[in-house]
Amino acid sequence: MTAPVIRSLLETDLYKFTMWQAMLHRHSEAQAEYRFACRNTPQYPLADLVGDLSRELDHLCSLSFAADELAYLRTLRFMKSDFIDFLRIFRFQRDFVSIQPDGDRLEIVVRGPQVHVMGFEIFLLAMVNELYFRRFDPVPALAEGRRRLHDKIELLRAFERDEPPRRHPFQFFDFGLRRRFSGDWHREVLTTLKTELPTLFRGTSNVLLAKELGLVPIGTMAHEYLQSYQATGVRLRDHQKAALEDWVQEYRGDLGIALTDVIGMDAFLADFDLYFAKLFDGLRHDSGDPVVWGEKALAHYEKLRIDAHTKRLVFSDALDMPKALSLYRHFADRVQLGFGIGTKLSNDMGLQTLNIVVKLTHVNGQPVAKLSDSPGKTMCEDQTFLAYLRQVFNVTPV
Image (cartoon, rainbow, N blue to C red; front, top):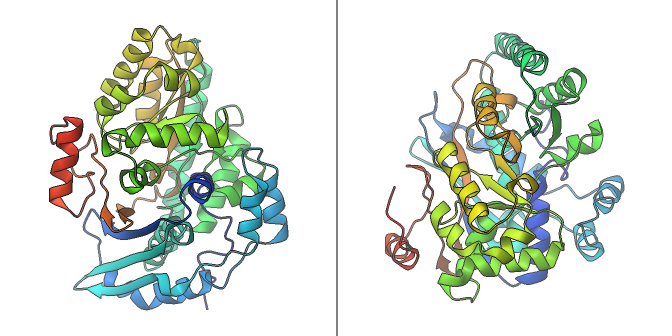
């Protein structure tokens, strides 16, 4: 028997905890539905994973937070004591998740109280990904992965040695949990980066590995947080402002990077006024042309007479190391930067990767949507609502 994919409830992205806490305090009564999607064509049908995935899910639902894991979360100053007490008694409920084949595809639907089902996302994605790649020969994959990791390290050593000094330093972190090759490989990658690039590699979104390897846990909010506010009682046109305001009140200066592409960058900046621009430390890019996005962000700060050197732009959309370095060279003399690299750190093995997501589709029985700045990343099952949302925010389809 192979080991379970997930061995600890702490092995999820930090932003799942931060959004979870905010929703528990602000909208604990919300009901939600999430759905799985694969955006590319796998090399074999994901429907073949149904049996193994069901067993993995049963195991996940048997886990609870250990005392040392809760103690670690208490060391994070933005985690509230009542939320930690909630996690102490928390268990995932198996009947909130439906898994079945849909032809060659895999259908996963998660439905229930949002504060009880929102945590499934990262675990489900990590399970699907690792079960899928367990069907490939690990020996050549790991050999190629180590070779490519070595090349990244050599590239960054050369950059550190030869790059002329700029106003702000280059910093990158790992965002690769959900699409990693395996848990063991993920640990090996982060251990190697911590040892070999201590000044450049600054942390990981994986809370368990942050705890065990002595790394900084990284993350603030994801799309589902702002999407939820499309159906929690505020006027639709005001939902971004309501979500940002609740975040400010919840975290009081911590976790100050705002995600910009739930309705698109232009619609976000229309709501990101002087009040929010001063309160938030910076912005995160996750779709659209990153240079165009960054220039819009800098122009917005300039218009508001805010010194961009006091702010940070975080890039996290399908980055590899050369792309991150190119963006660094473009912006590093004008603003603080950070680069969250996912698949190209945790699953760069010479194999075709999966482009899989678990996205929020409904809250309180109402559709919610993500209007991405990139073609193919818009998420909504209700075309009528999607058209209405575009009309309300004056967004042209990408």
